Image 1: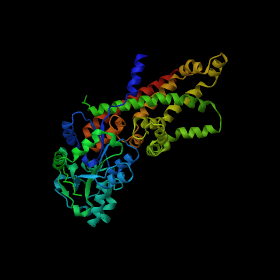
Image 2: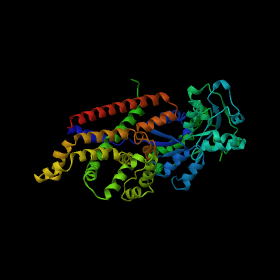
Image 3: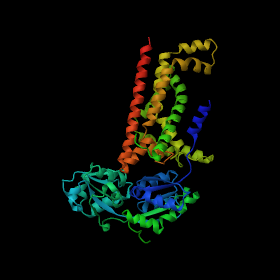
Length: 247
Length: 228
């Protein structure tokens, strides 16, 4: 009987409270570093991070997901949260993202975007433009380069930019338009890439908001301020992000 | 034995908790439902049978999508809960528990229907004529005689919940310690290109699922073996 009771307690036990941060997939590699720096200053805070495409995370928040801070890869989705009442204060930019062209064969050296027109490259991965900012920018850049018609039939779509990167990394796709920040994985250090001219697409102004639910979470504000600190910025710069655009 | 990360243990705890609670809840819900399906000949039976089997054919995304709409803060169930001062269920453990119960329903009901049909109404009628009350009949007649059916139903429910992915991803997100079950964590690892971590959990699940099914089938064969 006592064992049954203990089992029931185990089954019903609810997990300890923590600050929950919803972060764009392009932040996957830098986030552990940011968390370390943050908890070094605030040893009592515990942070849990959920990664996903910015559009998907925004939809989850609108449907009641208990995320306190939303770090988006653009400024459109945080603004949508504000418009729909799921966040109180206007979004603030904390970094800028860059798109890169990346391919699976290091021996080829860096690839110019025009090379995507060639049929030699059978599959080109981009993130799903419907809900991933990097996917939207990739489609814009391909259109601006006049490559869309030739490339579109060969596109494969990753659910978010992390999955898109994995498609190229595993060799399933020959090339991909991915986040610069995701080429910083140690195992990918030898892979050449080409930065895409930022004039070819709308900027990736990465903005964040504290959600309406996060207003009651004291650590949310602390984390938000940390993300704007010089320390956080210098970490972001080490992982392929650029300083935020001035408003 | 490769070392597991704290996040892995957390996901294992969430997964086991989900599987165990789903199995307990479903055995309680499925027993009367299966009894009714096994012994009543009413026109409603076909409809109920179809509803029970729906999760077998529907994509998990359909189920996840409607559950998200229903249980979330704008849905009827979510709004009712919030109106009485309780939190809505989207992106919570309770939410994915509701999802799992619906998703695994056919796996609990169908083995029990089969077992109750084999049993037939006679033993229960005899027990009733000897003065056994409804609960007495359940615990002293149905449970022992249909033991095999209950074990199969519980094992299948547990194993099927273990393999759940789509519903939980849509309804639960991927919150560590809350809705991040093993299948979702593996997806997360693969996405982060942490293939070593994905391998370690995937291989563990593969072996576990295989062992459960081997145990189940050898148990089934023994049960059939003793039947006259």
